[in-house]
Image (cartoon, rainbow, N blue to C red; front, side):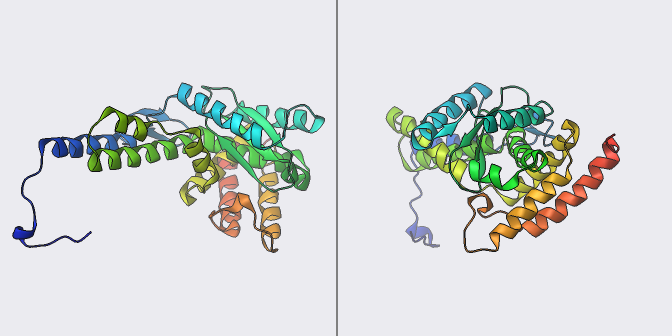
Length: 274
């Protein structure tokens, strides 16, 4: 699209409807993208945040996504390995800064090194990752990292941002007809799935790592287990196989260094465990 600098090439007349669309869209984008002076205090991030997705909506979205995952994968929620995962997960989630929903844990029966969370506190870990890590402390590290994403509301923020961008575009480039607004705002669980399987920002990953150290420490796990899990992933990433868990993430060497620094800070704050 070409824009002319000459006033003769610009239509000076903007319809009231289009102007109102711009105003409404701008307001929606401002609110949906978040504002540090609005919203409620998030203990996980230490900031006031406005996230226009309620807990009940997150749980509903998570339920939709769980149905899709159940139809696509075999989910283990009965084996001894699952019971072990649930014990570790509950121990970590009990010290999470976010307690407005019940965390659920599932094993995806596939030989891949991956783990992810969905809205509403559902955390899925692949059997391949469980087998590779072996110890409770290593498993607790990656679970604590995902709980950190939950507590910081990273998935909800990504969903809100996507909703904001779509709503903004719909209001600017289309008339304000009810059907159009419905199409823009009614994001399906498929969109949520795409958000989940897309990479978090590097900032979010570092934040989740910091929270993982905190939650492991408070739950009584050996925080060095998280370092070991990252070191295992670093070794695996040197091969030809691409790890889904490492999509566009910060370099593992940088994450390991940052986690070690965070361990020292947490030990100074809470004292050495007995």
